[in-house]
Image 1 (cartoon, rainbow, N blue to C red):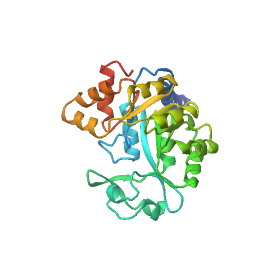
Image 2 (cartoon, rainbow, N blue to C red):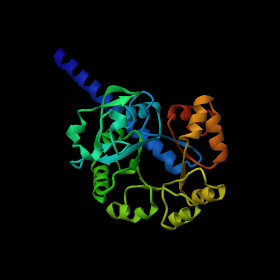
Image 3 (cartoon, rainbow, N blue to C red):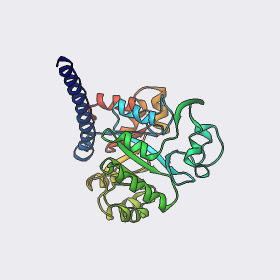
Image 4 (cartoon, helix red, strand yellow):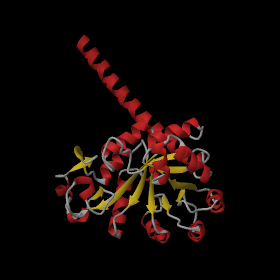
Length: 289
């Protein structure tokens, strides 16, 4: 009888722990999405190719690290293998990230699993992950920016299908380089949030006429007037710290981020290779919870 009592206690303890984990995960993504949609005054942090300071870029380890750091958005690059499996890889080839020659599209998924991902030039235990693995890992924890680098409509459809199959539609952004591709993407699935790229004021005006988007990606040539138009339309403004601003930040703390926010006062999503530093900076400024 006593043994049964302890077994019940152990089971209840395990169940409570699982419930706590589920609640925490749910609260985390709900909190991020509430900030994203309801608090435009808060600046959100996007980790370029996920948080890859300690792990290979576009790896599951880098996604876990972004979640651990409390980052809002993990940017991921999506390509398709020879046997039509969606995987994470920035470059067209696998040379820089694995040391092996050839395009992603020249290998099957099983063949790619033979090559460990490199970090700082050294092999790791991380392998090239599938897009589905990344979505399931991120589910309930962090927004995913889908930087779609595959070059076919088949891949676009499959990407949307995997988002729906994993139940992650509300926490993804489908990044579109050419705003004229938006109607096609919306014809596949209107539920998936789209982030179009605007390269100038003319494109911005065309995008705003297409409807409301949760966020519009701009570059550092934009004027305050165009940015104000985006914010007035109810969209967030995505700007990159990548390159000059991040480089300044690496040399002297706060200099790069100070300059970026001085130049783009109304930008409220910042993508960076230094997500943990940016998050710390924004919290000190009262711009992130």
